[in-house]
Picture 1 (cartoon, one colour):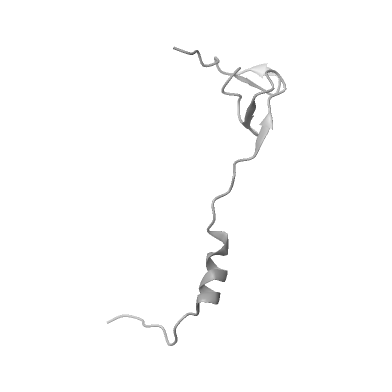
Picture 2 (spheres, one colour):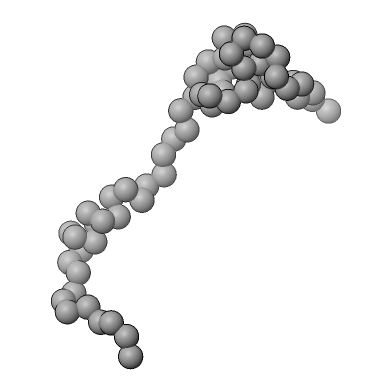
Length: 62
């Protein structure tokens, strides 16, 4: 057999445990170069700059 709980867990206690299981909205900041939203501490996908220098080639539209 296996371990079995002694008592049933109430809905309130179950909800308290699951309170941290929600989705979070990503924190977007404006790029200083192109002013488009980007993730903080990430290179801008639009212009390819990070901390004032070009680190990746910008995406081109097909």
